[in-house]
Image (cartoon, rainbow, N blue to C red; front, top):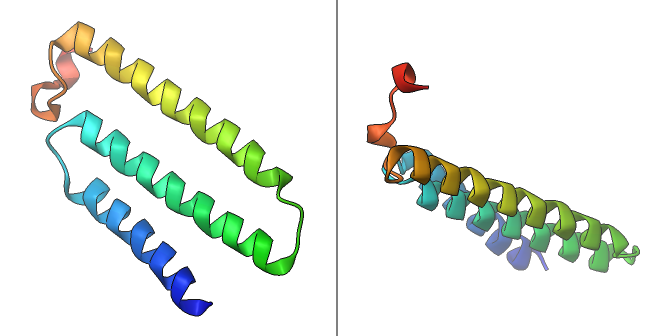
Length: 96
């Protein structure tokens, strides 16, 4: 029981590690954020099933996470159209 929770927390920290130490592409940072959201979803689902609660909140959480992912991808597409690539090194504060 506790080892599954530790595995989910390991997934969360792996996603946070990639998010913190990846400074090249915006797409990879978005993917690591989605991986972290997925690990939070698994922890929430595990907690709700373990304690016998209703799991309707999980569906609401999935709706918000899908909206967050779609918003991130639309911002990425807009960024690629404006700049030409998704490298963070090509971003300048003066061009905005």
